[in-house]
Image (tube, rainbow, N blue to C red):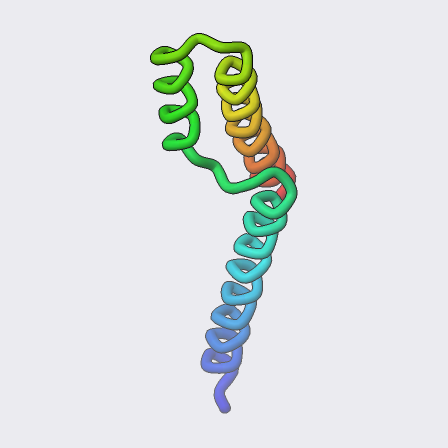
Length: 81
């Protein structure tokens, strides 16, 4: 095998491992705090708008906080990478 073919194969293999690592990290974040969902925030906001109870307000606050935490963890992870 030529040196160029060996380097190409190594590069492809390394790229594969990097992508697998990134997917595993995203999955770990999602397992920790849940998947990022704008639909969850929209539905919680609509429920609170329709019926302004403390339970709906708390659900909205939790959904917004969860989305914010998810975004912050992914940004932190990307900056560290």
